[in-house]
Image (cartoon, rainbow, N blue to C red; front, side, top):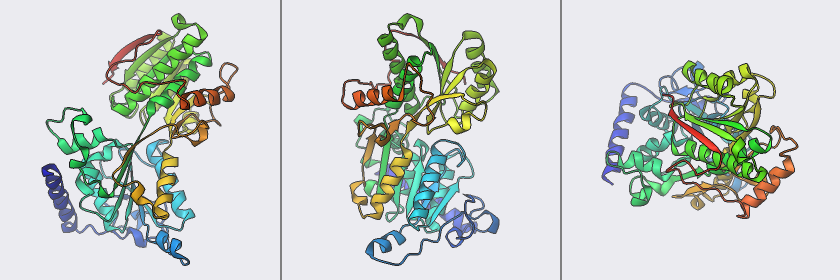
Length: 426
């Protein structure tokens, strides 16, 4: 509680500072200025930089009246709405839902990659009239901890934010990184917050399994920062590759290189490392897992006629801009499904079904399309070794418990295939 009170005081000081500097927000009166971004510096006053909204006025029965009370804002984390990942998926899904239901929608891009800027954007969104916030990514843990109690009438939907993320920000110095040792609700105001995480190890497993079944024997994993979500993707990937190699009886022929870049974007140093993997070590396909870090893998793959596996959303449309057919598949999280489901239930008056929960979303059906973790059926490069039917069979076996995947990230999983861990590039 002391941490929460301190966080509230800090957030209150930030909000006062913004008002003192003359930062009002007219975004929700700018219904004819769509798809523009509001930032912490310029969201309010400048006509050309106001956040885009939809009007949202409705007439009709009680259901329509309830919908008209919704005012949705989405805030980007460290990226923007063209990242072909968390931000873009959340933005496009939230905006489409709002348009279909005639509800105002705005998005905000913080003016810097910091907890303070993300919290400031929450202040802006609420000042602009938002009462439903879409917050994509673990980086919003600090904003949830500091802002939720300040705005009890605002619904916070924190995507991919788990107990560990909240505790790291809520406990601060002295946190032992074991969430089981704490009551997380003592460190944030849970009465108006819904958090969810995803079982990344499952879609990572699917991607690794598919790669080996499709004939790739030298695999790579390029993570962003070694945060839990990235690690679960990577360890699931290794488990899937190992399982497929065992089924084919080729454990001695399959190997994997494993590294994290230390950041969520590609650069010359990371591209150079990928050049070595593809060009010298003979890596055939790299699972690029971490925001924009795929750019380095894609650039190097093109030079050596290699392949890439995307992450979070179906990244084939953007990765394949480097070269047609570059993307084998993508290990996806169901952000769109989550956003549509939660917003729809808020519309139906079912917010209480979500309040205070931290869900860990994964398989809910033997039908791949209905799950919160999956491979993209339309863009995956199916082959004789792994067809769409084979994929459906795999998902059914995973859902039924015939195939199990460990979510333990304390150490690299034990595998029969050779795995070389290079730590971090930066």
